[in-house]
Length: 150
Image 1 (cartoon, rainbow, N blue to C red):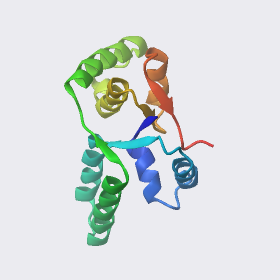
Image 2: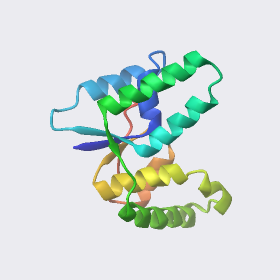
Image 3: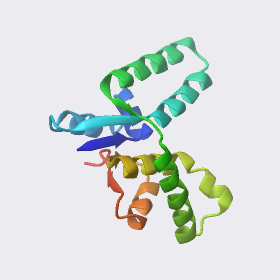
């Protein structure tokens, strides 16, 4: 199986004192040899934002080291043109079904891009973000797992 890890799942791996660290790291260690793991390029965009928001050199160094570790551990999933089609359709479907405002739905653009990548690449998205449970109800071609829960 191919798994696309959301930024929240990746972040739990960097925080050993996180309540989710043990569940996520255990799940990752117990996966099969035929399983492949991907981080989205979008996760690096989000992590870079955290890096530049950091005030201390020590925190920036931790971010940089963590990003290097992620690049070594996981393949990087890019965005694609077929994903753009799914993104537009999915975002419109979500807004129509939930009644969320145009302004509010924009806050979830990265989530829709991650879901679109998982759909077009035939991956299972791994996330602890609740929006994906709703997307799973809307799309039967979207597969989701939450490794933060035992």
